[in-house]
Image (cartoon, rainbow, N blue to C red; front, top):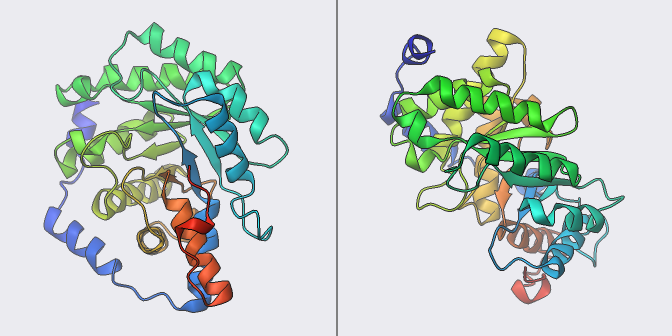
Length: 299
């Protein structure tokens, strides 16, 4: 495993950041912008991961995911709601019949500092409660110390615990991996171990999703499919707050991985505040007026 991962081509950091910045300047006109906003809404994993989460808050979040704009039933649903394992059953009930998935963080999120059996118990609890997707965190300490097989075997075990029911998103916490080379290695490691999605971050550290690290992960899934025929999803999470940000990421997807990834089965935004801005921009395009934050629900 070490031989393979360290044999991957090194990342040209300057070139990567320059390309990400260049793609971020693309101009999106009105018709395309309306399409992009609806597409972005459909890709949101509406998330609440706070110690103060209550069943009431999760029900409210589920209702918003199923009907993001109660005044306009043409607004698409979000892709999923993302909650802690103990809130999965509540979320499942809240989105019943809507087509919205329930995702759950697991494996001692966000630090991942627990014994494997504790992590697997976390996963099994969430799946048993009805989770459609599991977002796991890798052991960054093991990865950074070069114990790649430990990380690989944990992902394999978590994938097995997901069973046939739940898709697995593997979170790298890119802000703690230090280098782009490490992000590329983690991407390939996660895909080889059976990840259905690779995800940038937990949203709980200073540096989360960036255009550059997401571009790098999009290149990885593109190249992985070219070599294996297997398509893997990508989920940037944390720090994506505006419609402008979301559209920039969609341009990255289209120009790097291609149209096959422009679907919520293969691309997601991990976010809490992004949806409100998308809804306000959508209302502005429809009415010509900017409604402001008082016209959307406060999560």
